[in-house]
Length: 225
Picture (spheres, rainbow, N blue to C red):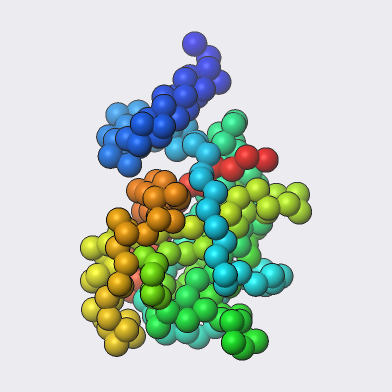
């Protein structure tokens, strides 16, 4: 069996698991069993579309650092964009993010500011990188980051990325988050979390290297072009 056929077989297997709602529970086991190269193939699943929400604002801010001095725990985001049909990385994809600050406020809603918003072009491996902060929360939603993927001038994906709830609880016990308290909405109570794929839409968080504060969050986005 050639490499292409093996990739398709593995992708079909993961799509079947996704349809059964099992990818979140079995994803780590499948990745470990298949190995690094095969795990990348297994991640090649179409990411569900969800609402962009009421706080999207058109902008052309191409920048890696979107913080604009907003206080919060540093978060390095690595968003890998793949073609969901071919499993190939999409170099040059324009990835856009936006999210609220530590107190649950979005920029641009009642002012002209644009903090925690921006675009980045994906590199040759399909990865777009941002420096931001761990987002806060607002009423009725579990903590999340909004994102869009633009290819060839068109939006090919609108989604949201989420966080491990235990990690979030620990982060929110620190300043500047603790004055806002813990979120009022869990993953289980957030319909959009379910629509986005639950654990498949959750960032893989690791501590930043070299003693730096904060986290590195990564996720693969499978899009239809």
